[in-house]
Image 1 (cartoon, rainbow, N blue to C red):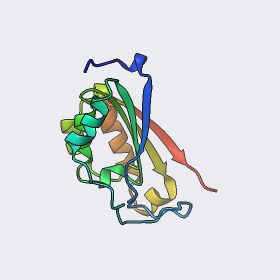
Image 2: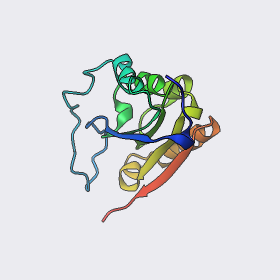
Image 3: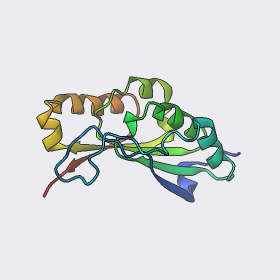
Amino acid sequence: MQKGTLKNITHFSLWHFNTACNFDCDYCFGHTKKEHPAVGRFSPDEIARSFDETGYTWWIGISGGEPFLYPGLVEIVEKLSRNHFVHIDTNLSCEMEKFLDKVNPARIVYLHCAFHAAEVEKRGKVEKFMEKVLLLRDSGFSTILSLVTYP
């Protein structure tokens, strides 16, 4: 498969990757700590191969729940991003070290870092959230920071 560039992407997939979330936001309809039974059904190699075999370079958006709660996410992103581009929606509540070590920032379009103010403040993690945003940026990752407002 020939690697494309971000400028010539013609195929996009928005993958509702998982359902589990570690936040308990008043406005959320999910409220589940349990993972959907289909999560983990395919290996990272099978997932990457399914995109590779199309012959196209994809932009794959990964959303959830909180994708980083899934233990195999980093390996999946690492394999997908060899030939494709990825963006991830995250609340930044999980540790990022493994992601920073294994994933090439040039293949990550951006990390959408959703600041759920009430939940982050309740946990006393405002500074930690901002530290992670800066760490990602300092490591070469593009971030989009959004404030989740309610009501």
